[in-house]
Each structure stands twice: as C-alpha cells, then as structure tokens.
Length: 197
Image 1 (cartoon, rainbow, N blue to C red):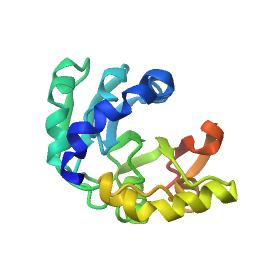
Image 2 (image 1 turned 30 degrees about the vertical axis):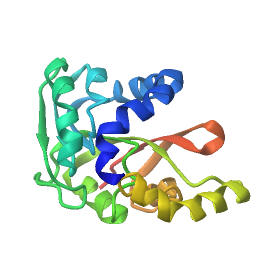
Image 3 (image 1 turned 90 degrees about the vertical axis):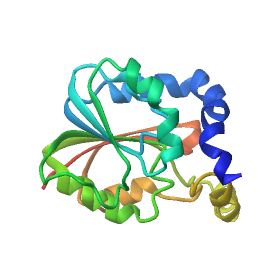
Image 4 (image 1 turned 120 degrees about the horizontal axis):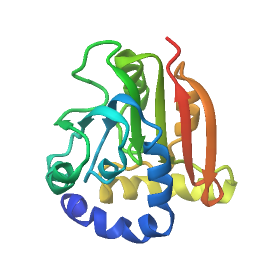
C-alpha cells in the first residue's frame, strides 16, 4: 500500500482540496515572497499558487511523488528547482531564503525538531515560515484515537503521524509564531511564524 501512496495521493485528496484546501493553500502560499524554500513538495500542488516570488527551491525525498509533480512544474509561473533530499539535511547555505513553505508534510518528517533547526539555518533573519498541517486534536477522545491509529496510518500513508503536535514543535523551536488559524475543529492549522535568529 505504501508503494501505491504517491499514485493515489492526488485522487484521495481531491475532495478535500475542492471543499476547502485549495482556498487555504492559495491564501497561505501567496504570502510567500523573495527566494522560497518549499519543504516536501509532494505532487506539486502548491506550485500554481506562487506569484510574487523570485524562485522556488523545492525538496522532496520520495522520487515517486516528485515524478507526479513534473506537469505542475512545467505549468508554474515562476522558476522551480527541485531536489531529492530530506528536511533534516538541507543542501543550502545559511541565510538563503526569504520564505519557507510547508503544507501537509511535517506529519511525515522522521525528525521534525532537526528539520526545524535546518529551516532556521537556511532562512534569513525575519524570514516567513508558512505552514499548513494537520495536528493532534485537543479533544481527548479524538486525540486518543489519533494516537491509537498512528502506527497503522504510518504504514499506509508514507510515514504520516496523525498524532503530531506540530504547533508545539514550532513554538518550541525558536521561531516566533505570529498567527495560527484553525480549521475542522483544530484538526488542521495554518501556522505563520518568523525566523528571529
């Protein structure tokens, strides 16, 4: 099943994208400016939303997902360079980026703390960090269900952790959280923060 995940991703996500995610993604991604780093570009869903940016350097560790993005890269309105690498080991110099974008990806990163350290290393002081993620819910019943389902879910969905508290990770990473917007009763969040190194 995990091997099929990259091929099924767009089809599985389409109902959510059409209902709400397209609006959330476009609103968030269009806040990007300057030189942009996208973490875990997957099938390239965000690429069409970039507007007033110089270029996007986009990383994705899964080559099967990257192949699904080729058409979207060609249609993008801005230059996009892609790299097969992980968020924990970014191949960029310190202080390189004005904006970092991560959407529905921090759930799959094996070491999110290290990824956040790397993001801060490659970001310029004051850089925007724009995230759209699903997180563990505050409601006890739902939260416990997420914890219980995570081991199986990780196997089915490319390492996705249903029970990750990404907001807590960001807030404790040294980034300054400016704005958090909740969707679907707190299951999904947009997190807008800044690098204050």
